[in-house]
Length: 340
Image (cartoon, rainbow, N blue to C red; front, top):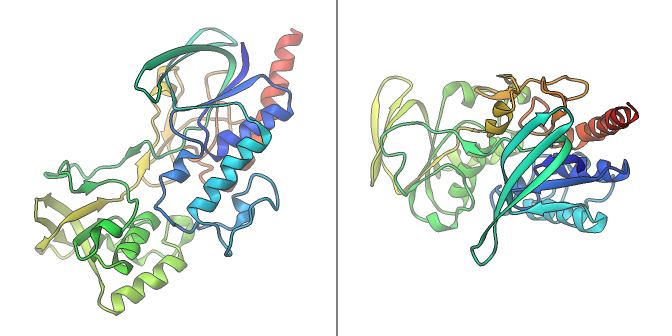
């Protein structure tokens, strides 16, 4: 039986595994994607918003070429951290169900698919579980006609297929602003649809776009390469056009080849809810988070802990630091349990 089973191999999961190893726990990380899968889903070549000291797993270990690391530099840093410390991680394995037949016993069921397409199943027993699943599992939708067309995407990867194409980006956060900027800079005829409240927001704590994104974005606008529409709603997406309503109530029809709907995403809380974990509205707009003790990060279900971006501690720095506090507490609770 494992002392601790960690679900998710993002920054929080890697940090938890590192501390678990140093605490002498018998642990395992299960990740349905790849190591640092959330980072891997960022746009190709993206420069991170944070400096190395907020992202690195060990002080002074991340050495980007410039002031802030790119997606690729950060991915390499996390992967080599796993390799250098021989962390116990199963990738490409998805947790499908968790049972709690008695206190201090979780039975975890998983499935995986081999590179030749064969499906495999496994069962693990663990005394404690730490969910570190991130918050990007379910991109939010507009729920409008045409959103299921093949030209509509809910994640942005790269701008290069859309040179000289009519591109629409819907959203008001950094991800949407970055996508609009990259598309415009690389030759797409880009329109960004954003609510006025988001466009005028300058408060970083309220999710305002970072100044190093806004400044070049505004330059693209001033030079006539990027169009911004302050909109009320997107009405319909068609094969060759999009119909939207502006904030003044005017309905516009704009030519369109591709649409990026980047209005946020949510964690998959299905397993947590099934286990009886309570949830509550999060600090981020429209988000929902598990209810947990702010000191121990233990949920209302004994033995189930949470860490990372799908909690209220949303920054990568917090995702790395929280397990350093929580996992020793888990180790202590296990020792107390054994002593009894």
